[in-house]
Length: 452
Image 1 (spheres, rainbow, N blue to C red):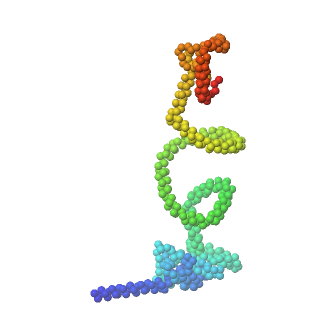
Image 2: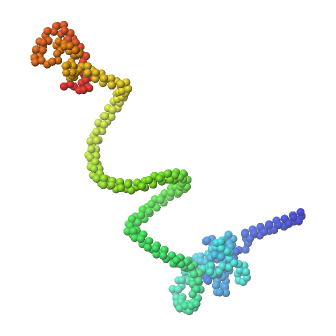
Image 3: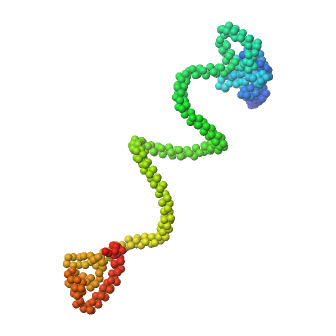
C-alpha cells in the first residue's frame, strides 16, 4: 500500500511539473525562431517587424551572410498562435514606408504540410530553416529610379554588356533569382502554362465571343440603354436597401411556408401529366385552328371597326334614353306589388284549372248561341236573343230562317197577325235577353276582337 501511494504521489508530482512547464512555455517561453535565406536583405535591419496577414507577430532577431553569399535573416516569432512554420511557408521583405524602412511579411503555410526542419548545428543552430526557394526580395522603387542617373546608367550598361559572359552557363540560376525577386513572375508562368494547355478552348472561346459580340454590337444602343436602366435600378435598390435586406431576412421563413405548396404543385403536375400528354396530341390540330382563325380575324377587323363607329354614334341616343329607363324602372318598382298579386292569381288559376274551365264556358257559351237550320249548324256573328232564339224541331210562326222576296214591310205584314199578348211577351223576353247578353258580348269582344 505504501509503495502504491508513493508511486501515485510521484506520478501526480510529475504531472504537476509537466503542466507548469507547458504553461510557462505557452505564456512566456523562448520565441520560435526561423532562419530564412534571402537573395538580398534589401536594407532590412535588426528589430524590424515580422508580420503575418498584416498583424505583427515578431521581429528580426539577427542578420548574416551565408557561405553562398546569400542573406540569412533570423526571424523571432513571439506569438505561438502562428507557429510552427510548415514546408510551404513563404517570407518576403517589403517596404514599410517611403523612407526605406522594411518588414518581413510571412505566411506560415498550411497544417497539411510537414513542419520546417530544425538546424542541428552550425550557423543558426536551434532555429528552423526556411530555404531561399521559399523567400523573395523585391527590388525597391528607388533602386529602379537610380538606373536613369549617372553614373548608375553607365555602370548598368557595363553590367548588361558583361552579363552574357558572366551568366553564359547559369541561365537557370538567373531565372530562379528573377522569379524569387518577384514571385508574381512564377505565378505568371503557371498561368501561361495553363493557358498553353487550353489553347483549343481559348480559340473556341474567341470564336464564340465573336459570334456573341456581333449581335451585341448591332444592339449597342439597346445595350447602352440597359446599362443606363440598370444604373437607375441600382440607385432605386440602394434607396430601398433596408427593405431589400428585410425581404432577404424573411426569405427563409417564406420558403419554409412555400415548401408544402410546392409539394402540392408537384403532385398536381404528376396528376396532370396524362392530360398534358393528350393535349400534346391535339397541339397540331389547335395550331391549324389558330392558323385558320387568322383570316377570320382579319376579315372581322373591318366589322369591329364599323361596330365601334356605330357604338360611338349611338352613344348620345343611348345616353338620352337614361330618363326613360329611369321612368321604366320606377314603373316596374311601382308595378311590383300588382305583378306579385297577378302572379299569385295566375298560379292559383293554373293550379285549380280555372283557365280551362273558363275556356270551356266560352266554348260552350258560343256553341249555345249557334243557329240550326235544314243545312246544319251555323255561327252567328253577334248575339241575338228573341222568341226565335230557342231550339225548336217544328216551325215557329214568325221565326222562319228562309229569305223572302218581299221587303221589310212585307215581313212586318206577315208578322202582323201576332196577338198583342204575344208581342208584349216577346218584347219583355228581348229586353231580358239583351241585358243578359251585354256582358257576354263584351267578354267575346275582348277575347276575339270587335265584330264586323
